[in-house]
Picture 1 (spheres, rainbow, N blue to C red):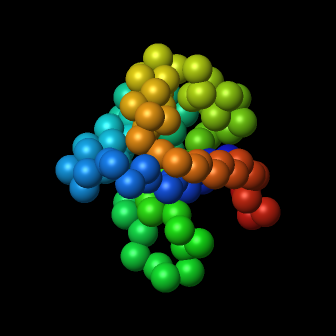
Picture 2: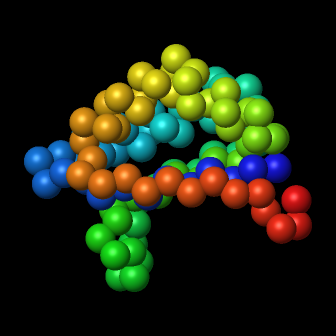
Length: 99
């Protein structure tokens, strides 16, 4: 298993509706890209977020699936839209100690 975590800080010009649509677009990848075991996305509510507004956690079958996810056309389509809407993005990939 591989965990892929993404945190985003929205641009101030991005509306709440646009933010919601982008998160829903990310959520839609769950059943369209092979190798995804679980996908969770949502708005931050923690005061400890260091300014990050939303998060994505994707569990992949293996590292090969994660590597195929990045260039996948459906992911690229959403990533392009997301990239235009964020000031900062932080990604972290890891193999869980128990997996």
